[in-house]
Length: 141
Picture 1 (spheres, rainbow, N blue to C red):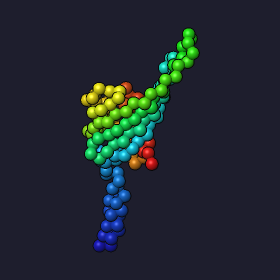
Picture 2 (cartoon, one colour):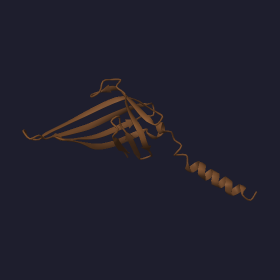
Picture 3 (cartoon, rainbow, N blue to C red):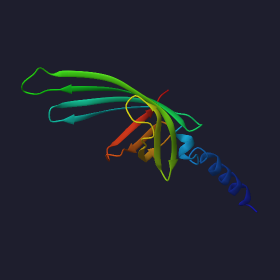
Picture 4 (cartoon, rainbow, N blue to C red):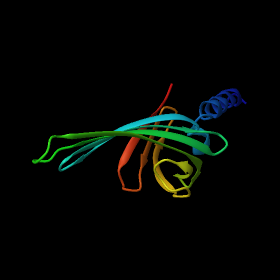
């Protein structure tokens, strides 16, 4: 009997402290995420800054700003900037995020993409894309 009270206190502390970790990835991903990265090529580089919002109903919106800086030995450097966006549906299955655009300025409708979830916490979302590149998005405040 003398261990009953400490056991109840310990059990209740464990149950309440683990609650946020027990959320499914589908609940943790809801919100707005920002991700920026740079790809380097022999004749230049491409920078991408993306903001994606995942809604509880399984829909998403995304906007990406893409900048290209191209150099070669013949011409002056070329700088190109463009913004693309899409809307679509998402779901998570077995730690993989699937996104299917229904309206996109850069992809045909129905072209699904998948991202392997490496880490999904309250503020950080690290994933491996279809090219095996790892990116980290930060939750927008």
